[in-house]
Length: 421
Image 1 (tube, helix red, strand yellow):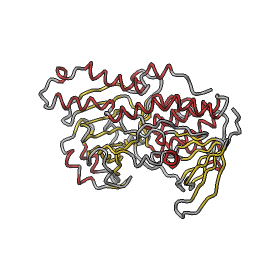
Image 2: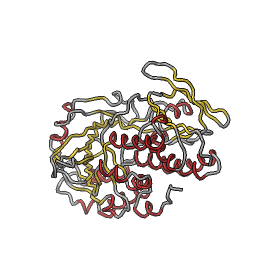
Image 3: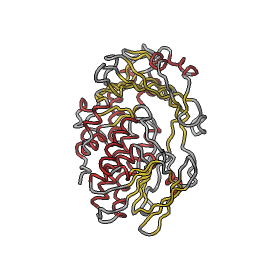
Image 4: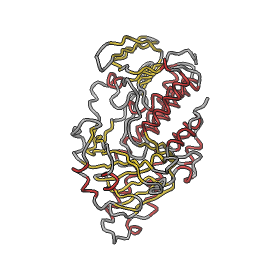
């Protein structure tokens, strides 16, 4: 397709920047518009599954991402009394050709920003541009921007293609689905933070403990090269409301853990003492566990959605950022190989919309975390014979079925076509 296409990417987060890099690698020069005036390495940890790390590898970013993250080799599910329900190898240890990387979201975003700047130039990444509306007109789209701190108009921009990577509160999604309303809340609040722990305290393991109404998720996201000190990321999931109700707090609210930490008093296992980890953390933030219903359509003329603007999902199964990275690569591939913009966006949506919608719905049913619910129901006391009431074969099937649904078992990941034209 014509390499001179004017491509506007709305949103300079992980998905927007990954899309810009992917497009640049196949010969396009997109422009990224981000509402924030100054990018900062904010946030806590995320997991990039092997099928996303495959895409980073093909973009030439594996070494850089591995250097600032941790290659995860195991997942362990525990009950709140410490009993192990399920454990499995992950990443390279599980037979993938690509690792699973746990990484600090903000540092990863800065890595992508640096790469995007090198490929498309500073002038093509425009901060402080908050989108107010898009207006399709034939083969072009007009985008209107403002400075959201002053309210001043920043004028109009015309593009041939618009990619909305502006997150769960996407302005573009709202324009096409004005009655959708606020995101759907599960009733669970996520209390997130990261703190340092001594060298050797924890291994490259993802720990999932508890049940749907109270859970602890923890894993390392970086290791200091000189001291070996580990940055440990955690999430305390607590049911604080009824499913479908309005979240009780604003987004990204800093909290005092004293009001809920008592519920984790006896949650300890080798390497991790939940109370100790949370108590030494300086900044802990509350987020509602929210998603949106799958859409019947992402693409409207020459405008399409990607990442959380297209398929926001509960943070279960580590699929949020992973699916967004795959969106980015699929978009660039189809824009580079299809005969027209319309054909490219149609192929992209045909490939990505229904599979990601299935993951959204599966995560509402707890995805692979179902093993914790079943174990709690069938083996409520330490003396229960776990194998007798919840056979290993059944636990294995839950893990296997979710991997197949999300297209990331080793066979599927190896067999999928490359997004490098």
